[in-house]
Length: 196
Image (cartoon, rainbow, N blue to C red; front, side):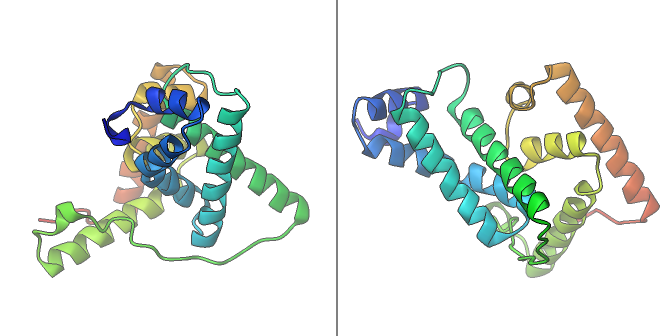
Protein backbone atom coordinates (compact mmCIF):
# COMPACT_ATOMS: atom_id res chain seq x y z
CA UNK A 1 0.00 0.00 0.00
CA UNK A 2 1.32 3.46 -0.91
CA UNK A 3 2.10 5.84 1.96
CA UNK A 4 -0.44 8.33 0.59
CA UNK A 5 -3.20 5.79 1.36
CA UNK A 6 -2.47 5.82 5.11
CA UNK A 7 -4.24 8.09 7.60
CA UNK A 8 -2.29 10.83 9.40
CA UNK A 9 -2.39 8.73 12.58
CA UNK A 10 -0.88 5.70 10.79
CA UNK A 11 1.83 7.85 9.17
CA UNK A 12 2.75 9.37 12.54
CA UNK A 13 3.07 5.87 14.04
CA UNK A 14 5.24 4.75 11.11
CA UNK A 15 7.52 7.79 11.49
CA UNK A 16 7.94 7.16 15.23
CA UNK A 17 8.92 3.56 14.38
CA UNK A 18 11.64 4.91 12.07
CA UNK A 19 10.03 5.24 8.64
CA UNK A 20 11.41 8.65 7.54
CA UNK A 21 9.39 8.82 4.31
CA UNK A 22 6.07 8.85 6.18
CA UNK A 23 6.77 12.36 7.52
CA UNK A 24 7.39 13.54 3.94
CA UNK A 25 3.94 12.24 3.02
CA UNK A 26 2.42 14.15 5.96
CA UNK A 27 4.19 17.38 4.94
CA UNK A 28 3.10 17.04 1.29
CA UNK A 29 -0.47 16.30 2.39
CA UNK A 30 -0.80 19.38 4.61
CA UNK A 31 1.72 21.90 3.24
CA UNK A 32 -0.82 24.02 1.34
CA UNK A 33 -3.15 24.52 4.32
CA UNK A 34 -0.28 25.23 6.73
CA UNK A 35 1.51 27.64 4.37
CA UNK A 36 -1.73 29.47 3.50
CA UNK A 37 -2.54 29.95 7.19
CA UNK A 38 0.95 31.30 7.94
CA UNK A 39 0.98 33.59 4.89
CA UNK A 40 -2.46 35.03 5.69
CA UNK A 41 -1.28 35.83 9.21
CA UNK A 42 2.13 37.35 8.39
CA UNK A 43 1.44 38.71 4.84
CA UNK A 44 5.08 38.31 3.81
CA UNK A 45 6.25 35.55 1.49
CA UNK A 46 9.81 35.21 2.83
CA UNK A 47 8.70 35.28 6.46
CA UNK A 48 5.92 32.76 5.71
CA UNK A 49 8.48 30.39 4.15
CA UNK A 50 10.76 30.69 7.21
CA UNK A 51 7.94 30.04 9.67
CA UNK A 52 6.65 27.18 7.50
CA UNK A 53 10.08 25.48 7.64
CA UNK A 54 10.40 26.13 11.40
CA UNK A 55 6.92 24.64 11.90
CA UNK A 56 7.81 21.32 10.29
CA UNK A 57 11.23 21.21 11.98
CA UNK A 58 9.39 21.56 15.29
CA UNK A 59 6.81 18.95 14.21
CA UNK A 60 9.57 16.44 13.40
CA UNK A 61 11.47 17.14 16.66
CA UNK A 62 8.25 16.83 18.68
CA UNK A 63 7.38 13.52 17.01
CA UNK A 64 10.91 12.18 17.56
CA UNK A 65 10.92 13.16 21.24
CA UNK A 66 7.46 11.64 21.85
CA UNK A 67 5.76 14.98 22.61
CA UNK A 68 2.89 14.37 20.19
CA UNK A 69 -0.33 13.14 21.79
CA UNK A 70 -3.04 11.83 19.48
CA UNK A 71 -5.93 13.88 20.86
CA UNK A 72 -7.47 15.32 17.75
CA UNK A 73 -6.46 15.95 14.18
CA UNK A 74 -2.79 16.04 13.18
CA UNK A 75 -3.41 19.15 11.03
CA UNK A 76 -4.88 21.06 14.01
CA UNK A 77 -1.76 20.24 16.03
CA UNK A 78 0.52 21.44 13.19
CA UNK A 79 -1.49 24.68 12.76
CA UNK A 80 -1.24 25.26 16.54
CA UNK A 81 2.57 24.94 16.31
CA UNK A 82 2.60 27.38 13.36
CA UNK A 83 0.31 29.77 15.26
CA UNK A 84 2.63 29.72 18.30
CA UNK A 85 5.68 30.37 16.11
CA UNK A 86 3.91 33.34 14.50
CA UNK A 87 3.12 34.76 17.96
CA UNK A 88 6.76 34.21 19.04
CA UNK A 89 7.98 36.03 15.92
CA UNK A 90 5.76 39.07 16.52
CA UNK A 91 6.70 39.17 20.22
CA UNK A 92 10.40 39.22 19.30
CA UNK A 93 9.80 41.85 16.59
CA UNK A 94 7.94 44.04 19.09
CA UNK A 95 10.78 43.74 21.62
CA UNK A 96 13.34 44.62 18.94
CA UNK A 97 11.14 47.53 17.73
CA UNK A 98 11.73 46.59 14.09
CA UNK A 99 8.94 46.95 11.63
CA UNK A 100 8.92 45.68 8.06
CA UNK A 101 6.87 47.22 5.29
CA UNK A 102 7.69 44.45 2.84
CA UNK A 103 4.47 43.36 1.22
CA UNK A 104 4.39 40.61 -1.33
CA UNK A 105 1.38 40.31 -3.57
CA UNK A 106 0.65 36.63 -4.10
CA UNK A 107 -2.39 35.41 -5.94
CA UNK A 108 -3.82 33.00 -3.40
CA UNK A 109 -7.04 32.75 -5.33
CA UNK A 110 -5.68 31.36 -8.58
CA UNK A 111 -7.34 27.99 -8.71
CA UNK A 112 -8.22 25.37 -11.33
CA UNK A 113 -11.88 25.62 -10.35
CA UNK A 114 -11.97 29.09 -11.93
CA UNK A 115 -10.37 27.94 -15.20
CA UNK A 116 -13.67 27.73 -17.09
CA UNK A 117 -14.33 31.44 -16.59
CA UNK A 118 -13.33 34.21 -18.99
CA UNK A 119 -10.37 36.48 -18.27
CA UNK A 120 -12.80 39.24 -17.25
CA UNK A 121 -14.55 36.89 -14.82
CA UNK A 122 -11.21 35.95 -13.29
CA UNK A 123 -10.19 39.60 -12.88
CA UNK A 124 -13.51 40.40 -11.17
CA UNK A 125 -13.26 37.24 -9.02
CA UNK A 126 -9.72 38.17 -7.92
CA UNK A 127 -10.79 41.74 -7.14
CA UNK A 128 -13.73 40.51 -5.04
CA UNK A 129 -11.49 38.07 -3.14
CA UNK A 130 -8.86 40.76 -2.57
CA UNK A 131 -11.49 43.26 -1.36
CA UNK A 132 -12.96 40.73 1.09
CA UNK A 133 -9.50 39.68 2.29
CA UNK A 134 -8.60 43.33 3.00
CA UNK A 135 -11.84 43.81 4.95
CA UNK A 136 -11.06 40.71 7.07
CA UNK A 137 -7.96 42.54 8.37
CA UNK A 138 -10.23 45.20 9.94
CA UNK A 139 -12.12 42.65 12.04
CA UNK A 140 -11.35 42.22 15.75
CA UNK A 141 -8.51 39.69 16.19
CA UNK A 142 -10.72 36.78 17.44
CA UNK A 143 -13.20 37.20 14.56
CA UNK A 144 -10.41 37.52 12.01
CA UNK A 145 -8.80 34.30 13.28
CA UNK A 146 -12.06 32.31 12.92
CA UNK A 147 -12.65 33.62 9.37
CA UNK A 148 -9.08 32.75 8.30
CA UNK A 149 -9.18 29.28 9.85
CA UNK A 150 -12.61 28.49 8.38
CA UNK A 151 -12.52 30.02 4.90
CA UNK A 152 -8.83 30.16 4.04
CA UNK A 153 -7.46 27.10 5.88
CA UNK A 154 -10.65 25.03 5.68
CA UNK A 155 -10.88 23.84 9.29
CA UNK A 156 -14.20 22.71 10.75
CA UNK A 157 -15.74 24.66 13.63
CA UNK A 158 -14.83 21.77 15.94
CA UNK A 159 -11.16 22.10 14.90
CA UNK A 160 -11.33 25.90 15.18
CA UNK A 161 -12.72 25.57 18.71
CA UNK A 162 -9.84 23.24 19.69
CA UNK A 163 -7.30 25.48 17.94
CA UNK A 164 -8.43 28.65 19.71
CA UNK A 165 -9.26 26.99 23.06
CA UNK A 166 -12.93 28.03 23.05
CA UNK A 167 -16.25 26.20 22.80
CA UNK A 168 -17.82 25.46 19.41
CA UNK A 169 -20.61 27.93 20.28
CA UNK A 170 -18.05 30.68 20.91
CA UNK A 171 -16.33 29.92 17.57
CA UNK A 172 -19.71 30.02 15.78
CA UNK A 173 -20.60 33.27 17.57
CA UNK A 174 -17.32 34.88 16.49
CA UNK A 175 -18.00 33.85 12.90
CA UNK A 176 -21.53 35.28 13.10
CA UNK A 177 -20.24 38.63 14.40
CA UNK A 178 -17.45 38.60 11.79
CA UNK A 179 -20.03 38.22 9.00
CA UNK A 180 -22.20 40.99 10.49
CA UNK A 181 -19.16 43.28 10.69
CA UNK A 182 -18.07 42.41 7.14
CA UNK A 183 -21.58 43.21 5.83
CA UNK A 184 -21.49 46.60 7.62
CA UNK A 185 -18.08 47.40 6.12
CA UNK A 186 -19.24 46.38 2.63
CA UNK A 187 -22.27 48.70 2.97
CA UNK A 188 -20.20 51.57 4.40
CA UNK A 189 -17.62 51.32 1.61
CA UNK A 190 -20.39 50.73 -0.97
CA UNK A 191 -18.49 47.77 -2.43
CA UNK A 192 -19.97 45.64 -5.16
CA UNK A 193 -19.09 42.03 -4.41
CA UNK A 194 -20.90 40.30 -7.22
CA UNK A 195 -19.31 38.43 -10.06
CA UNK A 196 -21.37 36.54 -12.62
